[in-house]
Amino acid sequence: IVFAVLILVIGGKKGIRSLASVILNIAIFSVVVELYLQGWNLIVVSSVASILFIIVSILLVAGRNKKATAAIAGTVAGTLFSMLIAVIVIFATGSNGIHYEEMEFLTRPPDQIFLAEIMIGTLGGIMDIAISISAAIYELYLKDPDMDTKLLVQSGMEIGKDIMGTMANTLVFAYISGSIPMILLWLKNGYSIFYIVGFNICLEIIRALTGSIGIVISIPITLYISVLLLRGRRIKGSEVRG
Image 1 (cartoon, one colour):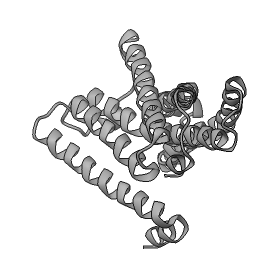
Image 2 (cartoon, one colour):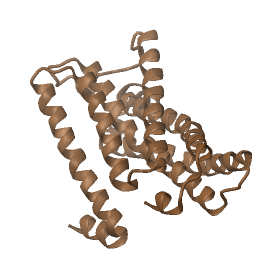
Image 3 (tube, rainbow, N blue to C red):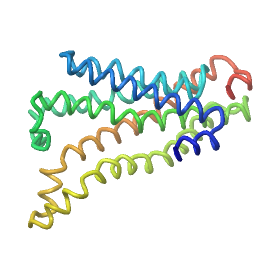
Image 4 (cartoon, helix red, strand yellow):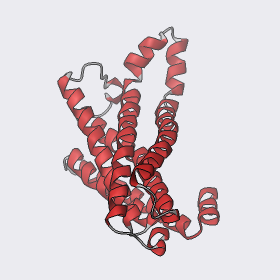
């Protein structure tokens, strides 16, 4: 209730749309779980759901405009790139160093579930930075439509670098924080921190690293897409604010 009230009071109309996107995404996720339990391929279902997550979230919050188009393209590209790297590394190393023991209670293949976790978990951070970059570029362009393209790109990169560090830390903290009780338990039982990191929380670290790769690569992708869309045609102020 507190969350809903705050997002509506502070966000206004955009807060309503943000809350609606959260509800819709929860509904989509519920459908994904149900389809998987009925025998559907989890990777395929998760991929389709991820695209829906991106489109629904960004369009509801940012509206239908070039800012949203750039953010959607940047998020999709960043997610695909990070997932491609993850899959290549996992298969090239034969999953060496990946310990699925914490998922041993599952009666289904853990590798598919783990890849789906990476995909869905990576989306949030990439989507956040993509919309931040596209919104910043649009505001800069709106203030000075005659700004030199090189200067616009440099400004966008500086903004992206500032956001990049904090977002990468956000992913690391988000994943590791859930393992704090188990980390304390292992330390209490005499396990070294190196053993815990390398064996017991390797899945969390892999998720955080994959998400961080997506965040880093989505910055230039979203930036150049935004500049390309803006330089293709000057937009009206009302379109940007919409």
